[in-house]
Amino acid sequence: MAPMLRADAFATLYLFHPIRKRISSREGRVPILMYHSVSDGRKEKRHPYYQTVTTPAAFASQMKFLHDHGHAVVNLDQAVASLHQPDGPAKRPVVITFDDGYRDFYVHAAPVLAKYGFSATMFLPTAHVGETHRSFNGAECMTWSEIRDLHKIGIQFGSHTVTHPHLSEMGVTDVEYEVRQSKAVIEERLGCAVTSFAYPYAFPEADRPFRQVLRSLLDESGYQCGVSTILGTADRSDDRYFMKRLPINTWDDERLFKAKLDGAYDWLHTVQYASKLMTNRH
Image (cartoon, rainbow, N blue to C red; front, top):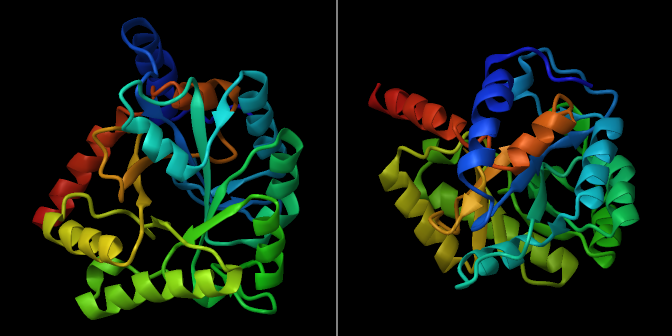
C-alpha cells in the first residue's frame, strides 16, 4: 500500500532521503522498529502518522524486505552493546520491538518472524495479561501460556509497566510500583531476568527532572536498557534507558520503510522535541 500524500512522508522521501544518501551512512546507528498491533480487523480513524496498526500483509512485506536486503535482526541488548563498541554496530543491524502484548502478535507476527529466523522484543503491561485473554484498548491480549510458548522460541519480553499509565503524571511511589512490579511479574512467570523497559505513551523528553527520577528507578530496579517514543534511529549518544525508535505501521510501503531504516525519518525528532518544549512551558 502506498503512503498517503502527507507532509512527513513527502519530506522524508523527496528531501531528506536523497540528502541522507549523499552525505552520510547508517554506520554508528541502529534502527529500532516500534510496532503495536498486527491486524486486519482494527481500524484507526486518525492520521497515518499516529496509527499503530499494521496489517498482516504489510508486516510480512516489511519482514521480507529486511531479509531480502541483508539486514541483521539483533536483540535490544545486543544493539545497545554494539553501539558502544569501538567499531560500532554490526553491518545493517535492526531491532524489532512490539508494545502492549496484543494477541495478534501471537497469531500474525510470530509466524512471519519465525519464517525468517527473526527475534523480537515484546513489552508487556502486566495488568492486561492473565491466564485467560484480557483486553487492552479494545483488543485481545496474549495469555501467559502463549507468552511462554513465544519465549521458548526466542521472543524476548520486557516491561511496559503494570497498568500502562502516564508515568510523568504520577508520584514517585506509584512510578516505582509500575517499574518494579511489572518486572517482577514477568520474571516470575518466565523464570528469566527482565532487563528492558518501554515507556508508555509519548515520552516527556523535555522534562529533565522526571527523566532523571525515572532513570534512577530503572537503574536501581535492575534494568539494563529501555526504549521510548523519541523519533529516530538509535545511536551511541542515546541514553540507554530511553533509546529512540521508528514507528512503523500499514502506511510504510517499501520506499518509506527503506527511508526510515536509512535514517531519513530522523529529521522529525527536531519537530517532535520543539513541540514537547512548547507543551512543557505551558
